[in-house]
Structure formats: structure tokens, C-alpha cells
Image (cartoon, rainbow, N blue to C red; front, side, top):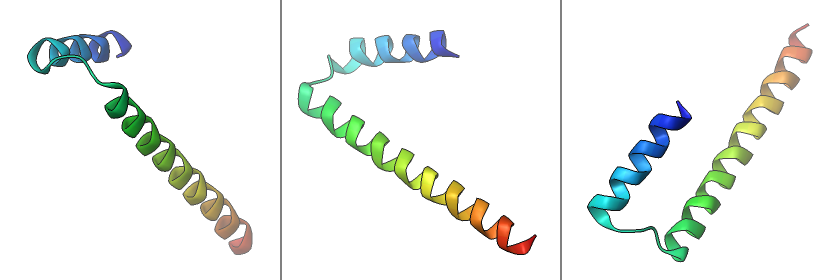
Length: 53
């Protein structure tokens, strides 16, 4: 899977040019927001499962 993602990144770079520092920072920020949301959902699911038990 990682190899396929690298191929995609390389292809996109050839088609559209390299990623700028600003684009990279925005993508990292978005990924961090998604990770935080997933963690909140996991924690909520664990609490709800514990309350139902």
C-alpha cells in the first residue's frame, strides 16, 4: 500500500508540480484534526460501551 501511495505522490508531482511548504503545512494540520476527531470518537465509543455494560 505504501508503495502505491508513493507512486501516486510522484505522479501528482509530475502532473501538478511539487507541494509547497504552505500546502504541506495545511495538509498536516488537516490530518492532525482528523486524528483528533477519530480519537474523540474512539473515546466516546469506549465510554458508551462501558456505560451499557
